[in-house]
Image (cartoon, rainbow, N blue to C red; front, top):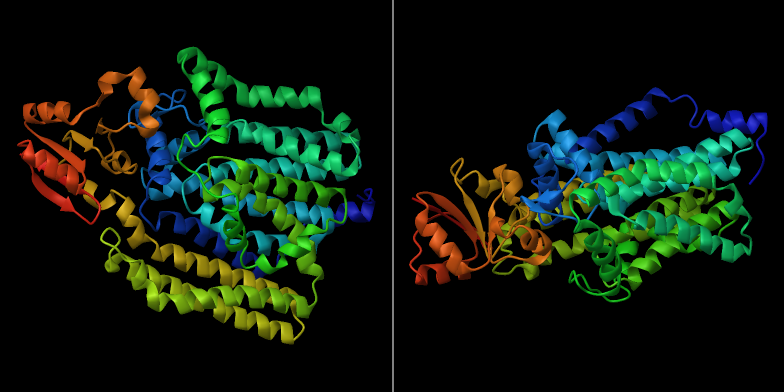
Length: 547
């Protein structure tokens, strides 16, 4: 990495230079749209309902130390996401916007952090290309619009990565130290977001680069004494306090949630070793065709980026627990690798990259007339058809933008072509996300919760929708449901009903109540003489109430 010169420092410090009115207005509009989309859809289970309910539980109980899911002890993850969600609900009210605000801000932070870092490392125009690439990459955008832990984790890890890169290029000891301590802060926030993976990813990436270069000299510059102090001061207090209050926490969190989750299919999220290949290819659109160009790092900084992304992909591919969002932390370093290549790419190469993205969307558009093939008894045409129309509209939005980008390339306006491609893809993703809501309603309790009389005790009998407590604004009593509630139910057995027999007895004793269940469970309860009128039904679930 080149040493700082006065001219270089000034160029990097200015970042993107003075914003033109058009650029500033466009960025503000897109950021507002990014945030506005957070409240445009109902929450859908399981993840969105789970994490919204955890945050709401903290807000309602005032206990910000011990997480509870639907009133039961829940130790699977640390609390940073829960704290952020509870704070947002306290400020803006209990709704979808507040529930999703943390991942939305996390996504915007990632994009801004990547643009800032690329500008400092490579210059102003590279920063703009990183902004365009990061702000339009499918998996960064989509995961910022859904409530899960991975957007917050990725924001913290992106802070750690970018600060490490900037520390290595800093010319002054004091500047290097500040960036390095910021990297340690990112690691601490990552630990508070999702556990020890916040340490594993940065450490493994640094070790892989050291093995690649056969050079471990960088270890001396990691500010171990001050850095470990930052890590412990930020991340350790909650772990200490919750372990003191709940002795069962430590074994469950560190053994079950880390070792057993990685080595065994205990969470039933198995997948083939290649499961994340399609996630990477689709998730990196519209820049997927550029992936081969990212495999040839040019310097130490790019070797760290590639080691970071590669480790995330291999680590989670080897894990026995797989969800598509797990590899999200590999996308920011890929964007940093992409930005200088986008800036340097000639018109012909950009045209090839654009064509691959256009073909992907064209294939989706061609598939929409056949959407009826994906219908079933539990997923009717009334849900699939609006989704297909929305995806078709999204494809048309991108294809129009691709045409604008192609015309810009013909005129030699390469930066304009990249901007057109990025904006078109971002807007297409927003159109597709808006179309998801009818499908998402199948996994949401938004509509049915309004039909349950206020203050009526609610039972989830053999079936549980994670969004149900959030939309009811109160806990429900679980009946014959274990799954992720196993620890909480064992520690607090009075908070649930293990058998249908126990539920039937409780139901008959209550003057009023409501039950959320499946058709098969309702048929079984009818055979046992359980009364109740149906107030809600859809292809997947039923709600009955008494009287």
